[in-house]
Image (cartoon, rainbow, N blue to C red; front, top):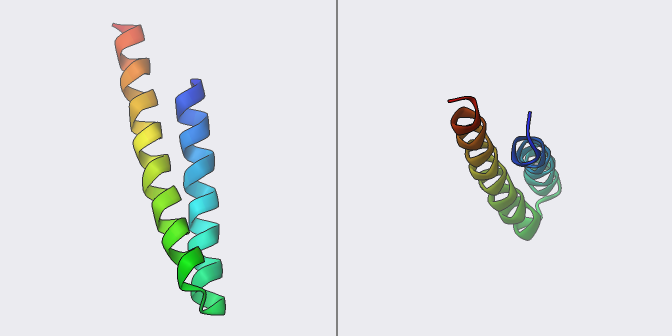
Length: 57
């Protein structure tokens, strides 16, 4: 697992937590930040997956 995969996974987890926090407490800003972090994390993890694939081949 490379750096981008780890950071992306971590950011995605934090985003899920933020989104759920926002939903529970009715905080729209936290919910939106959570969604943004979640998507950003998925993108970064995908970049890491691509880098790992290229490094293997």
